[in-house]
Image 1: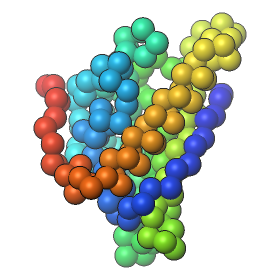
Image 2: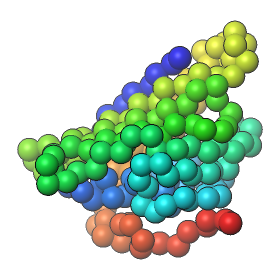
Image 3: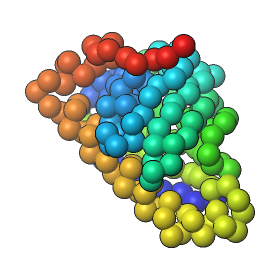
Image 4: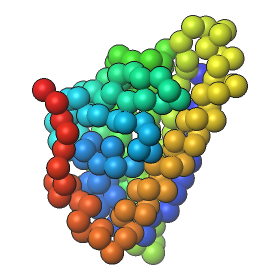
Length: 174
């Protein structure tokens, strides 16, 4: 198993950052265009415990489909307004193991610290571990950096109110 973790501070309140991230329709907006990501099935919008999402994308020239389930979900609420968390895990897809943890922490300045961790294992045993070291880990590190940078840019922009949940079209397929 390999882990990649990255943290970014976003100058936006936790509730807005969390709402943006749990609307799976926004995912396509934060990945590089060359991934050609398509949301095949959104399950429930916004995401909640047990939701299954199916995406099709192209990474490194390889087209694949990933289905992931929300296996942990702890939104901000009246009991804990300063933090939130959720995890999605692959139920079908190209990895031997895939987990994506999302932590949200409200900062004293009013901004939000977002920490993402990818925990993964490539398929095919020793050959997969070699691919991880030589190629996959760098690609996933770049992807995570791109996603967080884009989230920060969108949520801090003057058009931030326009990027909120439900303010854009979707490409959900039946």
